[in-house]
Image (cartoon, rainbow, N blue to C red; front, top):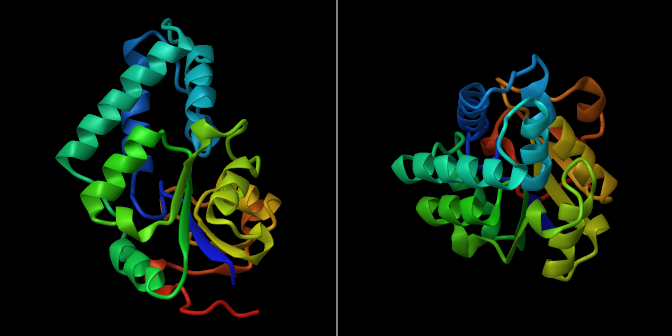
Length: 212
């Protein structure tokens, strides 16, 4: 097996509720209108993509300024507290002892580094990728393909760990075997979940060695 490549938001850190709270408040403060499907559409978007989308919702600031202010608010929240998912730290440390680990996240680089440093997990990952650093965010496969390239492995030999619809689609499109760990508050769509090679209820159930 080439490597294990983790998503960050909703897999290692329970950030989706924080992202939703911060972005929802930001949209309301700046004249936009949050739609019923906004949160599900935002999950997996890269920073330029979600900033442009918030602008389309009616936020009067330009996308670059939207991104700057929202990311600053998220960093402030993380400096106060990093809400790790159950069993996240133990699972990463356990697998890092047996496999090469990578990370492919839709979060901006600054937030990836803050989270991994605060959680004491930075040294566990041989390569980390923000979809800011590739052409397209999830569900496109770019982030996972770049993670495999930085690790020097064939993506078809990798296992990805994902929670969201767009993340599952992204890793599957990259040719990786995907372990789904559905978030209880933001479950993936059935068609996306059907792409998973294995579904587990939480990170404590990740297998030591994936079955062929």
